[in-house]
Image 1: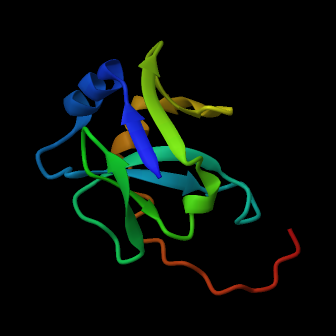
Image 2: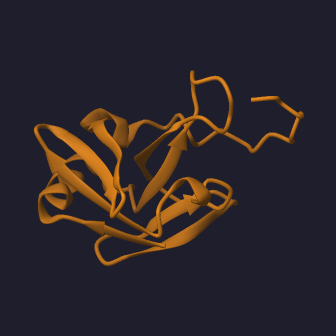
Amino acid sequence: MKLTITDTAWEKVQALREEAHRYLVLYFDTVGVGCKSNGIPTVRLAEKPRSRDIEVESETIPALVDKQQEVYFAEEVKLDFSNNVFRLSSKEGFLNALIPQAHLTHTDFLDEEPEASRGDSC
């Protein structure tokens, strides 16, 4: 998996990034969407990898993705910044065209542990 960050997006990431933020995490946000297979691809900044994170190729900043969430992202992903929002896309189209700047610094994903399958019917 490869992440490309445009110059415009990189400038904005650097402006939002604190010194401790060493990683950019590709994150599949399932909060408030019901079934765990429904969600929105997004990005977060993080201080360190979680136990289930794997590396994503990136020339700008070390990047990670949860190994169980990798399937929700394309093989090549691009992060751009336009009209005051981040945009996550692939060759196939937008994965998420409206990522607010404030979402990069949310820490909501840090405490999540993968749930054992409960046989949900969604």
